[in-house]
Length: 85
Image (cartoon, rainbow, N blue to C red):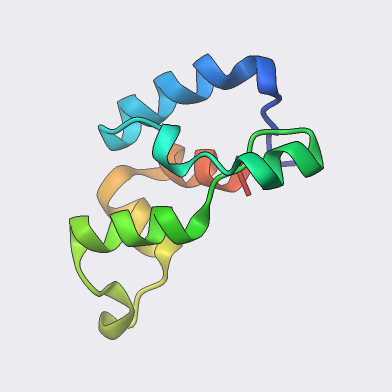
């Protein structure tokens, strides 16, 4: 089962995100979805834009976001993103 992070765990998510991706989680934090579901959520549009700035248009290479995150940032990064969906 995928881990879920609650509001009081924001500092944990921030540290993990910084460690795995080298950037702050703040620009990707989806306040509306988080409030609606009472747990931390990521804005996948913002994350996708950022990921494209890091690795280019991976879709045209036949890769999924999950594949690119796994290849560049590792399985822990995939698990963190999944926990924020």
